[in-house]
Image (cartoon, rainbow, N blue to C red):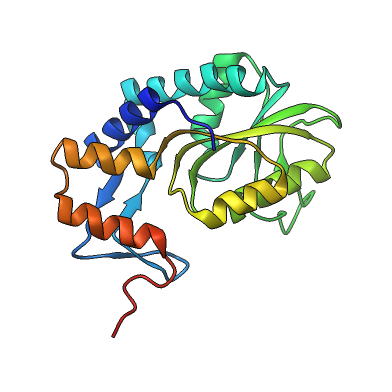
Length: 215
């Protein structure tokens, strides 16, 4: 996983400011997977704050070129990364496509929407990485259309070991604007959470699938 420390801290602070990242160790959230979690991340809120979405757009555009070289196409993962993906593509002056979780059931039954030619270099934009499974399914859909995937850029990652393994197995380099480690450090420093709450959040991150199931 690739990140820039200054960018990671700044992005984490902005996400906390607009409540895109909610930390609530005492009253955990339940994810769609059934996991109990003391953190919930909704990066779609970024689109509602012009100065923050512009910051995210600019950091993505700068770092995508730096880490992967300028691609031929930007691909966003539906639905969370469509908005920010379009902003990034516009900033770089590039075509944009997006990837559905699965092919449409009607019409042309597309999974990749937009114009994509075989052999084009693509960087995938994602809003959030948990296990990486759905993000890498999008990568496989693009590869099946003949795309050459240069890498993936995401706003935030939980930093799970399973995600790191999944990306390594898929041979995909991941750049993130921010990550769990920098978020917790900043949240304590800025008094969004206490050190005791930080300990709880670290325990969850070490074993998210079993956390909160005792008793």
